[in-house]
Length: 129
Image: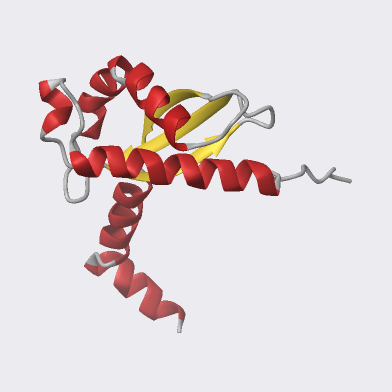
């Protein structure tokens, strides 16, 4: 029998959403000295925190573009600045370290949708009816 693993606590979810909101604002206002980030249009799609709130995984995407991976080194360079902004905006005992990752979920969904609309797949799906 499989043991159910507990999901994130309400506190984790609330803190993660507040961090996402602060980071989204920073990216929207282009508050960076780094030229790679100063003009980049980045969307913060999700933030997940560890149970002890010491680490936050930040998922980012660029809508309509697939080059978000190229911006990850610049985001890592600017993570101390962004962490400071999070500390200033939120009342937390300890501000989590920020770890940036590309969010490829939308790209994956678009790829699956494209595959589902191929004629040979559509034919196979119609044959099942």
